[in-house]
Image 1: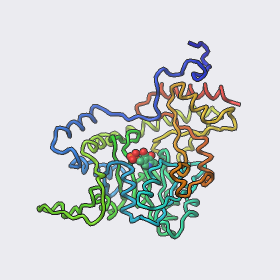
Image 2: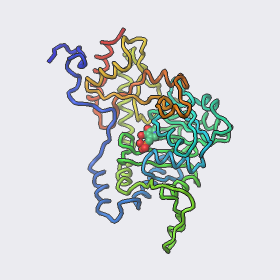
Image 3: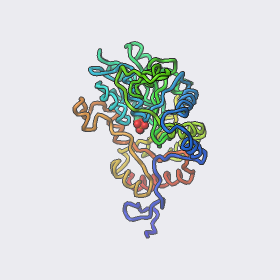
Image 4: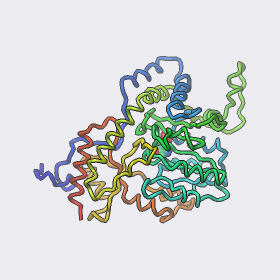
Length: 399
Ligand SMILES: Cc1ncc(COP(=O)(O)O)c(C=O)c1O
């Protein structure tokens, strides 16, 4: 093996780490396992008392009046749009810097996602760009708290109110984030959408939810739509009859998943504190690299949930592009990732008006983005390996 510690692994050197470090990973404790096995020994496997218990706990944690749990964040987006009455001919204004599900769910209901550009500093939907994208067909604005950093919700609420639109936040990255001094989910949006995919703050296997800050017919509609459109009142009556008066789906969350989610939710504060500590370590240790632009500090009254830690490569200071830096870091066993190709650049979106150059700020950011490993079970030594590998790679490729 090469004795030169500066030789990149991709060029035949010794990798900084012997074992792969992923960008995100769930954490399951013995307590989680006990919660799930108790369900397996009980009378209910699919939606039952644990779903209701999880809904109550989630609503309390995010400061919502009510919650409806479903089978995934994608299902939650689909049903939030359906419940809001969004349909064929309608438009939904959203950010291009998100997982495709935010926009795909608009296509599910026959609506058109319209992409408005992001703010250069926060990488979140720019309220002015969102307002400029509103047309008479627009029904909702759907911001995404990218990487866990809360959006400018006050400004977006003002746009929605001026234009008579719903504000539906995709909060899949932002469980536990704070915006304008209040938990995300308790404040400005009409509906909030959550995901409990394993890399998220609460890992349910698969799972999602729609919450509302005030009592809402929309959440009631989500409950009905997740279960084939079955009328809950007729179902709870003693007889055999039930009524279906709208087309619903099977998007039920199982009690098995709900028990895991509830157990994980109990550790959310711990999870957030660990993510914040690791992000703080990165902020301090990476500040010396002029080839990196680090995430901006939290705004006053805001706290990021640090779902992702995303740096931007200062490409003018490097002799190679992002692809080479990415490959070199992966060869060092650092599982960097990229979130996200602007959604409209996927070939699917060519049919829906997607074309290069649509959102220039998002496109320029995309060329530079690099997600570093960040998850609660990571150790300081793991984070030090990431810093060391970045140092090694940036020294090699610096201009
Ligand atoms: C921003 C965003 N929206 C929606 C989703 C969809 O969630 P799920 O994977 O639970 O369907 C995800 C995640 O995976 C996401 O990151």
